[in-house]
Length: 435
Ligand code: UD1
Image (cartoon, rainbow, N blue to C red; front, side):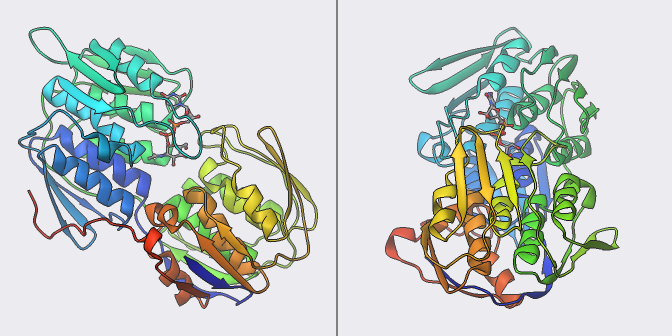
């Protein structure tokens, strides 16, 4: 559990790590290449270690050195991803596209539901079927194969009913090695989709339009080695900006790509924050004088990110007004409300809306993290609250924030982790060399 003694002013600089969501999909994307690929700026996170375990279970060599991973998928020994690993990490479903593209066959268990909603994979499956794959779901396992003499997927025109990040990424990876041209319409435009496209292009893939709602991929027979560095994590950067705002502190952050934070920066400024760009990849938030209420609706990029909704709710609980937060991306992503209310917040949920009435202060309390970003929201609330907050459920936090406590400590936060037996995360440290 994490103990936080609130109300310590923060000050200083934070180094932002590589983007978790880009790293996870790019690790899967390395399966597309029959040569060794180097991926840099990979954050040290439980989710990244789980993805590495899945790749190793497929017989692929994964080596770690500092923040770099070297992945060699010359020989893929297995087309079947093990249930025990896939069930722990939804992102592991990303291996379907590359396995199908490389081997013409993939067997991956359904990733199942998770705390924030059902999260089906129907859009991934329908897109792969449009590309000629025979996909059956039996006993909870997605079994996909490509028939025909070439064993290659066929380019197709695919319209996504919803701009799903995961489906766009699965189909883009599958299409890199397909025969002919694939057009993904109503594609997700998230920066992580663009990072994956850039990684694939660095391996020789022919992709254009990533970052718009239409992505065109011209399949090539094979890809080649590359050395690629992951973009900075926009959600981690946004979380630290909210840490500055909620504690009325001055914090600077780098490296960041401010264009990836447009919606977050606009909302912070609307609430009353002053943020200056010190250089193209360096932002500074100044101590906030007043915090106004505002309305927020989560949307696909470039709209306001669902991954920042909980953190903004923590901030708005302390605003001088009322706010309405509407979650449209996931159906069950307001579970932090009960925990924030336990700390003295005044938030009511009606369907997918949270009505937040600002209160003058929060009080430290024992709370439980329900998912990754909810756990970050509770840390932020704890930093601003009077007295001590104790957060349980740190396995969520460890999935997505690299060294959060030590980064906050460096800024002056009073925060301490106490490892209780139930929370010990039992994950192997990646050896320096592993095949
Ligand atoms: C990714 C991110 C996650 C982020 C989310 C939205 C990763 C590892 N995770 O998740 O942090 O919150 O994007 O920005 O990159 N859906 C379907 N059918 C499908 C696929 C999705 O109905 O086949 C629905 C989902 O249930 C959800 C919505 O579409 O309600 C958005 O999901 P999606 O964009 O696919 O998010 P993920 O890729 O799962």
